[in-house]
Image (tube, rainbow, N blue to C red; front, top):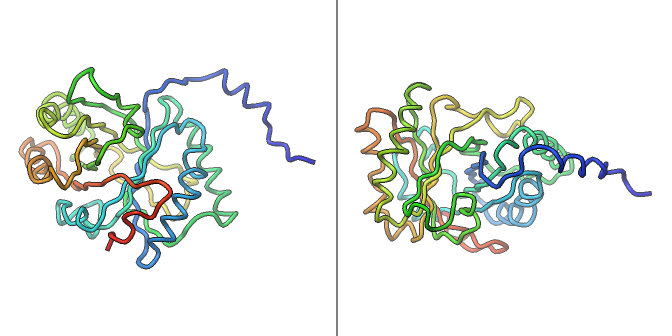
Length: 279
C-alpha cells in the first residue's frame, strides 16, 4: 500500500499566494569543511544536499554553488573580520533565490525537511557554518541599465565569479542611510566600466527558533547588509583594480564598516574540480 503524501493539497496550494519570479529572499551560506573532509563534503553537497536540502523545496527556484580556492581565500579583506575567523574560513558559498512573498512557507518546509534529513542520516556533520542566513532582498543595481540579465537570472547566467561583501552599520537607522547611499551613489559609480554586471543587496533575517542546532542564530539582523557582486570576469583578473579597496569608500562615508570582501568562482556541478586547491 502506497504512503499517503497528501498530494491532493498541492492543487489547492498552487491556487493561492504570490508566484512571481522576483528574488524577494535569499539563502546565502558560506561553509568550511573540516580538514580531511573536503572531498566527502563536496560529494555529499553536490550529490544530495543541493537538491534534497534546497532546490527540491517549494519556492526556492534558483541556486548556485561557488568555491574559493586558496589563492582566492588569500585575497579576502579585512584581515580581522567579524564574519570569518580566520578571514580565509569558508571555502564554499551557496546562494539561492526564494520567490518574493513566500519566505514563511519556505521556512516551514525547510525546517521540516532538515529535521527529516537529520533523522535519516543525510546531513554531513564534518563542516562549519561560517556565514549562513536567510535574507530579504533590498535592492539590485545594474551596470547596464535595462540591458542584460535581471537579478532573477543571476544564478542561472554563466557568470565567471562572485564577490561576497558584508557591511555593518551601527544602528537600524544608519543602515537605512547606508542602503540609500549604496543604491544611489556608491554602487552605480563602482559598477560603471567594471566587470561586475550587477550587485544584489540583502538584509539578514533571524532564523526560526526550531532551526538546526549546528547553525548559529543570525547576527546583525538590524544593522547588516549583504552584497553579491556578479562578475563577467575571473575575480583574480580584476581584483586589484576593482575590489581590493572596497573598504575605503564605505569607511569614508561614515555609514558602515566592511567586515568581509570575499571572491569566489563557480563550481562545476557533479565534479570535484577545485577540491584539491582549497588548502
